[in-house]
Length: 218
Image (cartoon, rainbow, N blue to C red; front, top):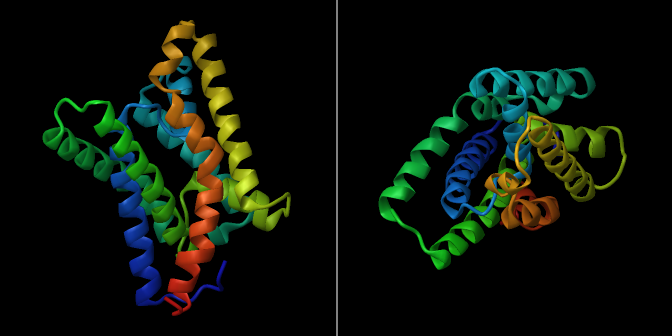
């Protein structure tokens, strides 16, 4: 990460990154090929824990926020709170807009929607991570493990945390009494591809696009 210095470029990269990411989650929902790994965790917890999803989401994010504050609070900033309080509304709006344009998407549309969502979600994540004005509470976990604790490269740590989320999500869903056939409602091909390749692609965008953009080389 770059040393922090608030500038118009950082603010623009931060806001653009979060908004791009939110629109891309809407594209993921349209694709219906499985949610991202963190959302698969939340789906399993929602089935297992008898409290409203909105409350549960806040609690889980609050726990991860406390984790980040305890071990490396410099990852908490403007983008963190935009993610917490605004991202959900943008996702909802973008998904509704995409549904209006594609009310009955076929496999080709869904596949293109997934590819678009996946690539630009990684690009958006790269922009706001590099802007260094805070990251989502989930992103902070892998960044602290790789950057602060030096447990390994970010792309590999992110793959590991993604698969842990998927495994816990499936486990909690099954413990709640869910049928094995119901797993595909939230874990699909898109989930697995995201778990394997999101970390490496964010890392690639960091090195080839976001960091050069921030440093004025692009």
